Amino acid sequence: MRPKMTGSRYVLAVKNLKTSADYYQSLLGFETLWSDGFWHFLVRDKIIIMLGECADEIPAGEIGDHSYFGYFEVANIDGLYQEYQAKGVEFLSPLENKPWGQREFAIRTVDGHRIAFGEEIENPQTGI
Image 1 (cartoon, rainbow, N blue to C red):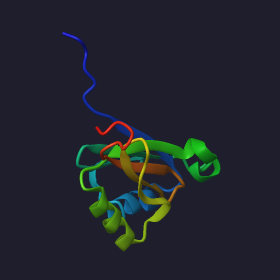
Image 2 (image 1 turned 180 degrees about the vertical axis):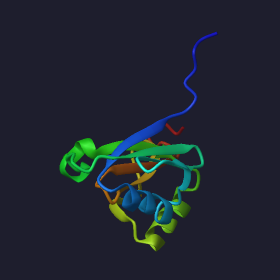
Image 3 (image 1 turned 90 degrees about the vertical axis):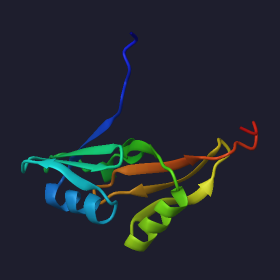
Image 4 (image 1 turned 180 degrees about the horizontal axis):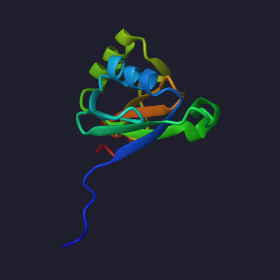
């Protein structure tokens, strides 16, 4: 049997574990999966974020394009966009249809990490 990748987890360095965990819970809708004071694991649907406190490291907001860490596939992207608008999430790009067949938007987290969210739509070039 061919080995199969069954999911993904994102490991992020954050300046303040409590502040970052609170952000993911209150603004992005994640729930605590596990925490021990040094790490805080959060989950929303099939996405798991593993936050580790690294107070002395360069913040993600200072590393430019390298602060993108994930592109999350979404069902009902319009609903998620509205949810995040209502909670005051910082958007980097508005919700819009892209020529590569995705409807997407991007945000910046409290630590400066950037996340893109997308939902597949019909690609106007291929009709698929």
